[in-house]
Amino acid sequence: MSEPNIKIPLDLTNPGQFFACCGLLELADRLWPGAEGWFEAGHFCIRSNLAAFVPLMDSLRELSVANTMAPEQLSRLEFLGSLSKKQRQETPDLEDEKKKLESLRREEPIVLLGNTSLRIDWFCDADSGGSRFKTWAGQQSVLDITGAMKDGIHAIDIETESSLWSNARGIGLPFNFDSDLGGQGSALDIGFSFDPLAASEATRIEGSCKPALEFLCFVGLQRFRPREIKDDNRFVYAAWNTPLLPGIAAAAICQSIRLSTAPSYEFRLLYRTKYLKSFLPAQPFQGDRYE
Image 1 (tube, rainbow, N blue to C red):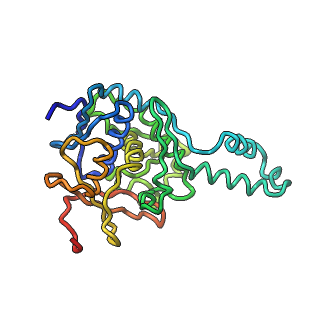
Image 2: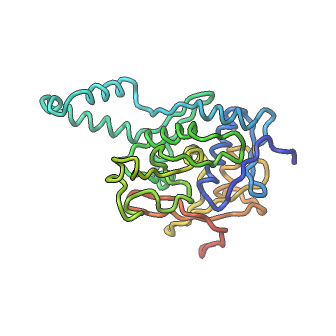
Image 3: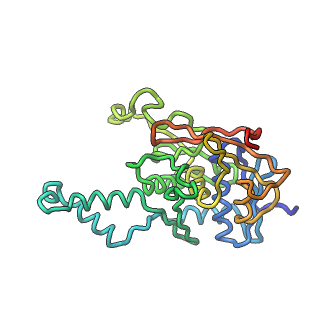
């Protein structure tokens, strides 16, 4: 096997890191068609004739984040937002129109544009099960979270492969794909609210997260999904260990293609509230009672 161009250290028991590596392969293949990836000895490897880590990070930073709303819808929302509530209430249906447009802004599929383009809509897909990995609540904006995580990549120094999972503080709420986050995401998890402490710099508590992990995992879940063990809140992914193109790797992950030497792991979703979820750490898969 030839040497990889890019070699990312990772913890295979962190499902967020695993699917972030898949997102990295997705972007690499779009920049350099034919890029292959695989997992090897605690690292994720990418191989292509042209691939290199720094250009890949430069392309990642240059991506812009938008959604599928039409320009006229965005302009209309901006106009309605410039009116006072009293002004909107004086004209029938304006308040309802504003709420509908705000809902679209929160929930519409994401579009990434730059050296490559990618539509991300897995969180809208109930038919194939993508939406079960939606970790945010309905009143939270997927556009705002995606934008914050992408912008957060600028707040960390990613100069080498080993710095990809660096932390940033105070950049916004993450998706909670990183299983290392544990219970720091909400007041319910902690036991008290951060809000009363935010007025003063002396008492303000700002959470930290790994923006590249959160953003790239969001990208990776568009194509790469684990296998679900039905009615058991268990999800299995196989860390394929031979160079594969993204389309074939996606089948290997969910074990549609079985690679006998590929180790597999399972993880669960933590239901922090009825709507808010987090990825829990994975463990080696031991099989299930239906197999």
